[in-house]
Amino acid sequence: MRHGISGRKFNRKVAHNKALLINLAKSLIKYEQIVTTLPKAKELRPLVEKAITLGKRGGLQKRRQTISLLGDNDLVVKIMGPLSERYNSRAGGYARILHNGFRKGDRAPMAVIELIGRDESAKASAVQADSSVTIAAEKE
Image (cartoon, rainbow, N blue to C red; front, side):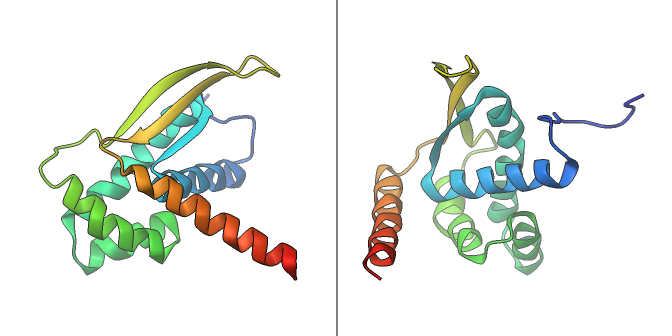
């Protein structure tokens, strides 16, 4: 029996499932919009909203809890700074899930999950930074 066990398994072990969701959360906070499958997006939204709520509350303890949740100090700085200011007057619902058809290979339902009122330049600047690192690595 599965009493008291919540969440989807995604046909993975617990540690892999946890790592998957944390990596998706990091990507969503970094780029402010990602494309993934619909069930993963539905599992991701509460995790991201909890992180942003912790960031809005501020303080050292909430910063440590957010670092413990995400494991990345740079993203915590973004959550505590621009994201907390952006959502200061909002009571919740920081992420939006939009259905995006079906994947060609296996007909998996796809979705776009994005932060409400996202910064359009966040994705472009992050992609440019990643591509410059890749180009530098290729030159070596």
